[in-house]
Length: 84
Length: 180
Image (cartoon, rainbow over all chains, first blue to last red; front, side):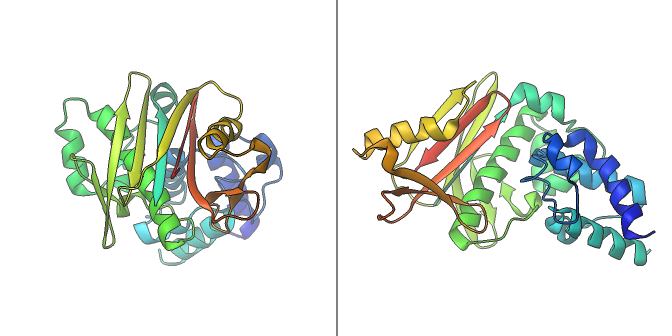
């Protein structure tokens, strides 16, 4: 799976939790989930669970800590897919 | 050092399903899960612990100049209101109402001022109105600054030392707490 495919899957996952539509339209690697998309922090946990389900991976606490941006999330997903 | 967090209970119910498989395990330690599952009202304790974690996260991040992180499980809450993180312990007070829950976390016994608002457009403006009264200055001289980690402070007339302020917003509710 390449970066574009990962990004488009991630977009589908985060869309229901986004409170700033403009941020979603401009979604890119540097997008910050809280600052740019105004995703509620409790819903970030749902994003993590959805990512686990979608990619069939397990996200440990250490990896979860970083997942506040699109870039960091894609990195975590790539690492976990590689390790499968 | 200070931090706060407010949870609009109606909005929390709409936005989150705390009983979703895996959700509680990502947020709470096994001791916290035990507290929650043996509580008379598990849902209320979920949101109480959540707001304690968020409030302490803000105080802790400010104190040690930490980058943002999604690490709710690193903060261990107890039923008596103390929260443990790394080698620190924070005191918290949670105000529990029918429609919201509001936590203030702090490390010292310094005086603070806090206020909760329902349905206001601009919490920063409301906070400024109160701060200028308390500090006997003009509202136009007050500004809020955020550091690189997004942690806000109050500055008066660009000169004085920054004063810690923490602002929280969820659903219909907003609140601020400041060391003034």
